[in-house]
Image (cartoon, rainbow, N blue to C red; front, side, top):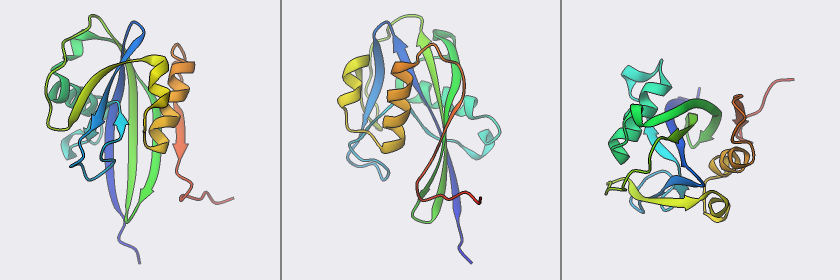
Amino acid sequence: MNDMQTIAFAGAFLKWQDEVLLMQRGKHKKLGPGLWAGIGGHIEQSEINSPLTACLREIEEETGIQFMQIEKLQLRYFALLKHDNALHSIYYFSGILKEKPNLRETSEGKLHWIKLKDGINLDMATFMKSFYLHWINNISDTSLHCFLDSNIHLLT
């Protein structure tokens, strides 16, 4: 029997006017080195029942942005991916920043303000690119969208 590990992640696209705050992940990262993503990371064991709590913690750790600086933070995307011997569940939110904060250094990668339309040309993981493309074309949509990895099959 396979010993399948489960890992949960939470992240967000944070918008300011016609820009989004994205991170180019560090080359040293185990998952997605050098790829672009929103702000986020692992959900800690104590946060397993609240991806929003994990998302807010990750945002503050990586950017210094606090929850009161974000409006309309909503869960928009969920992905279930199989990677090696692990099942990754990914919760992705989107929100609007009340003001444009200065960027700071982070050990996770490099933060950048990117024009929304320019983000489509960045090198992202497949699920992240799907989230991003849908998000920029449906920013006012508040429904939850799901993405299943092609390595996961549903019984029919």
